[in-house]
Image (tube, rainbow, N blue to C red; front, side, top):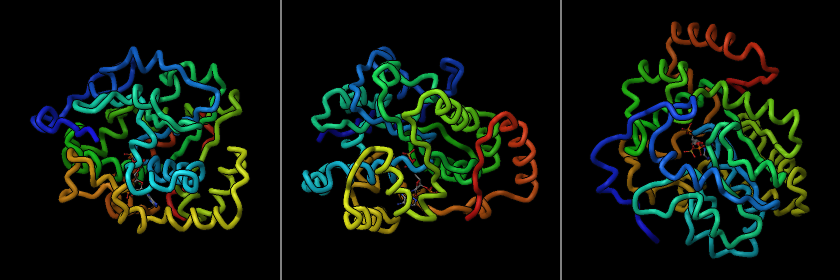
Length: 300
Ligand code: PPS
């Protein structure tokens, strides 16, 4: 397998800049033309999320649903980010995500994106591809993103929690404002019926139920026994131990600072938000989300 070019990546963290109205870093815009011109096929499935909302979890569930039995060897040889390429990724030393996606030998092709809805390559909509969107409540999403930016040298330096808290509220995190991202896909669902909108909190609450709903959306007739087996094998503890899903094979992530599979909980925000931060956040949230019907649970 090709290796990330650490030498090129470890010297300095990337700078955030405005790109099409969204805060971005160059690793996700360097290959822009090829991303936008990506030719989707009707059976491609796009797994879209704001970063840290449960992408890896749902990617693994879907990989097992489609390929768990027919290609068992991929479970021990291919990390999840090779099975489900990150279409906008352009990291030194690795083939760009759009190229990896293009060359995927599987049917369907499972493709990951963090792009906000308005920047998704047009062909996915034109081909009426299925889109699985996963959303996570803003508070836990922010905390998870903070720890990710601390440990991932390919992300901007988050500073301390208070600094990151302000960046998150102001949309100055990579892929832009959480608020617009989650509500953008929610609104798109009103006119584009091939979106399945999932919530991280629901998957924590009852993974089996969410696997069932996903199968209905995907038109899969996976047996109840198999679904149950999948729901068990994607448990946090199992994924944390599994080298193919825990990102321990990615050298730019420093697990001594924080592991990728960190806690996997609903409500960890309570260990980070001060009372004052919580009040500020709630007030700001009300304003930002006043025009959407979208509702989240910050505890279960
Ligand atoms: S990324 O980098 O955007 O692709 O990250 P993403 O996979 O979207 O999100 C990582 C967070 O999801 C948690 N996670 C899980 N939680 C519960 N159960 C399972 N199986 C699971 N798999 C991933 C992961 O721990 C990160 O959340 P935090 O809160 O940081 O632990």
